[in-house]
Image (cartoon, rainbow, N blue to C red; front, side):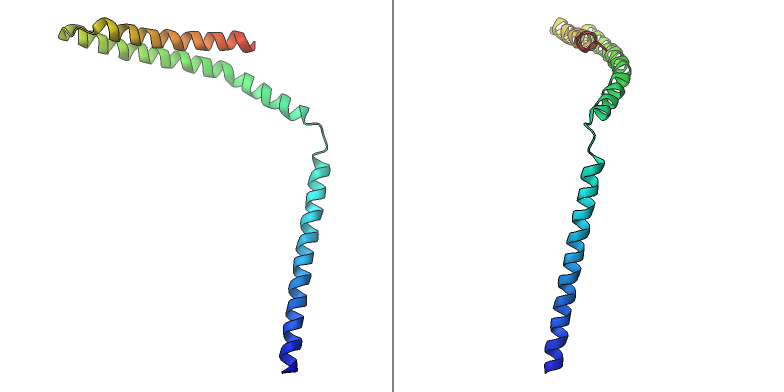
Length: 116
C-alpha cells in the first residue's frame, strides 16, 4: 500500500518537474525572440513597401488586360443584341463601355495618387 502511495507521489513530482521545465523553456524562447526583434522594424516596412511598389506596375498592366478582354466580350454581346433587334442595346453598350473605362481610370488614378 505504501509503495503505491510513494509511486504516485513520484509520478506527481515528475509531472510537476516536466511542467516546470516546459514553462522555463517557453519563457527562455520568448525572451530570446523579444531580443531578436529589438530593431524598430522600419527596414521590414520599407522592404514590404518596395515589393508592393514593384508589383503595382504589373497589377496595372493586368487591369488593362482585363479591361481589354471585357471590352471584347462586351462588344460581342452588344453586337448580338443589336443583330437580334433588342430594345435595350444602348443600355448594355453603355454599361460595358463604362466598366472598361472605369478599370482604366482606376489603374491610372491609383498610379498617380500613390506616386508609384
